[in-house]
Image (cartoon, rainbow, N blue to C red; front, side, top):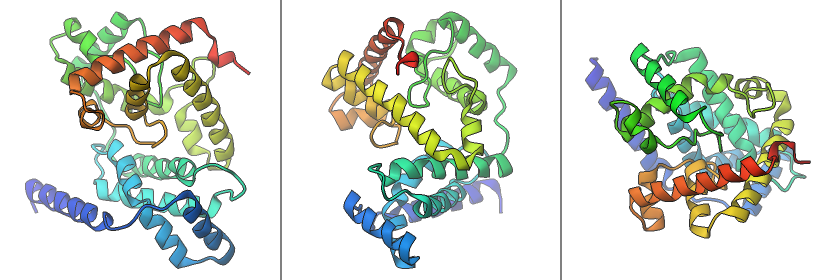
Length: 285
C-alpha cells in the first residue's frame, strides 16, 4: 500500500469513526455520577460503556491536539479512550469535580506516553530554529503560558522574518511541541509537564495545582476583561471545556470574523499580562 492510499484509508476510518460516535448522547453530571458509582461499586461493564461512549468526542478533541507526531490519530484516540476508562475506575465520588476535568489528565497521559514510545521525534530545522530564536529575542521571552498554549501573537512578529502570521503560528507550535514537556509549569518552580505526566500517583496534587491556577485566572479575567474578551480567551485556551479552539473555529461561535477574534484575543492577553505585572499571582496564598 503506497503512502497516498494509506493516508486516504486513515482519513476514511477517522471520518467513519466520527460519524459513529456522533450518535451517542452527552450525559449530565448527575447521570455520570450514577454510572461512575455502578462502575466502582459493581464493576458494571454496561455503565463503563455508556460513560465512555458519551465522552468519545472529548477524547477525539484531545487526540487532535497531538496529531502530526508520526502516530495515526485513531491510535491516539484509542489510547485516550483507555485513559478515560482508567479515570472512571479511579475517580473520587466524594468530590464535586466534573468527571471530564479529572479524566483529561489520564487521557493526555496515555496519548503522550504512546507518542513517546511509538511516534517520531519532533525535529525543527536549523532555519526555523533561528527564526524561533529571533522571535524570542524580539519578544524578550516566550510570554506567560495560559492553559498550556503559548500566548505570543504571531501577527505582531510578521516584520521580524520572511514568514506570515499563519506560518509563524505553525513554527511556534513546533517549538512548543518540542519543548513543552521539559518546560517549567510556572516561572518559580522546576516541576515540568513531563514530570506530572510520568507520575500517575500524584494526580490529586496535579488537580489541586490546576484548580489553584484556574481560580486565579478566573479572578484575573473577571477583574480585567469584558464578557466578550472572557469568552474568546476561554475558547482559545480550553477553560471550562478543556478544548482549545482555533481563531477560525471561534469566529462563527461568537459571530465575529477570524481577524476580529484575533484582535480581541490580543487585547485580552495584553490586559492579563498587565495584571500579572502588577499582582504577584504566583505568590498568592
